[in-house]
Image (cartoon, rainbow over all chains, first blue to last red; front, side, top):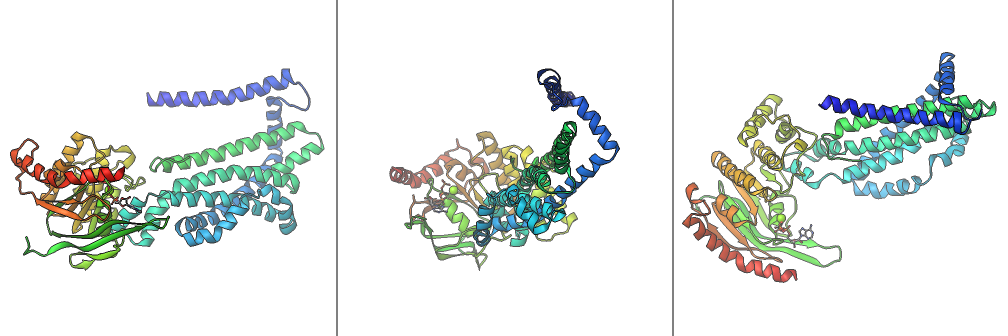
Length: 255
Length: 265
Ligand SMILES: Nc1ncnc2c1ncn2[C@@H]1O[C@H](COP(=O)(O)OP(=O)(O)OP(=O)(O)O)[C@@H](O)[C@H]1O
Ligand SMILES: [Mg+2]
């Protein structure tokens, strides 16, 4: 029974995806037939071709590496900062100007500055991804700490836990789902930011691939990059949702 | 009773809450109470009279504004493992730990070896009637089961005393009656000293060796105490001796309910 339901769920899910491609196909072959709007099969053929000659891998891995490094860096910095902000009012007051001010300046607005500061290479990209990740992670983590039920902490103290133990065995695990949620949102933002940054200034990456294709009017190649972006983003997000689910089943619900 | 030294001593305790508007609220004033070791003491009072405030101070969660509280002769300055607390709601349980993980939490924090703490945790899991539920997480347990986990968690730490704040208030009548019976049995078996808060007179008579009734707030203190010397058979609502105690306790609290209702308007 359970397995049947699950299969049904997956089936409906795949159907949803199939309909996306079907609509795309209908639109590109009958509604707006144009060399500027390739149908799905043409894009897939092109994708296979680009995958064979290594171009696709080169650009996709460049973008992924930047996202991976920046995202890891931003999370690694953001989690402890968020924990500190959530735990200590002094730290909150000290860092609030940064979080409250900077989070309204989008990473895309900083692309030019980043390139001037860190050059056209990896430095500027990783800086931008760290920047776009860190505030979301900080804010979600801090909110998670603030949301820990005071009775959980009181209970631990009455069971003999010291302040450090309360932090590591109560506050931290109780905050994990919030941290994961923040990281998941930050991951989506990283995809937006990396493409924008690569469009403006980069030697490789999916954004650069789109830009180059535009110069030579290789519309199907643009679509390959878009398709790959969608797939990579989707996979990354799935992995995170799975992570949240694996933990959050044991936690109070978030998101 | 006066010959045995009290385990818990509250001496002229007051609690003033500072409000954000600047007007202070005196919740408790000049509250004094001695609880001898091994006694099951029920604190009874109208809503908002300051019962939780008293418990929080004994637990060490909140400081007294004046007066002293001592447990086993030692002044209370902070929460510690000698006073186990059972909270009214279930939000104090750790959702990421199993039932067993919750019960052995205190032992783990106190550095007890794994084998030993698991043995103890299982013992108390069984004592509260949850044998075989060890691997379940709080989200998978009913309200009554979660309260049992809380009680087992507090007991497994083997504190000198238990502080319980309306632990059964959110349960249905059947589960509550069940839990009352079981708590009484556990306390008889383990000889724990208990400070138990309730606003249910029946519950107090079923459980207590002594019942203390508080004045309506603000500036509340103990109005009087009633010793309950009933046998287990006499602790039935229909029993004559039960109703006699009921009348006595009700006589103490009746006026306070009226006062508290009037103040609320
Ligand atoms: N943190 C606080 N700040 C300000 N006032 C408080 C605070 N906690 C409690 N009070 C006030 O102190 C009084 C006593 O509160 P307390 O929670 O001790 O009552 P209670 O007897 O436990 O009531 P109930 O039976 O409803 O749980 C109430 O009037 C309440 O408004
Ligand atoms: Mg209360």
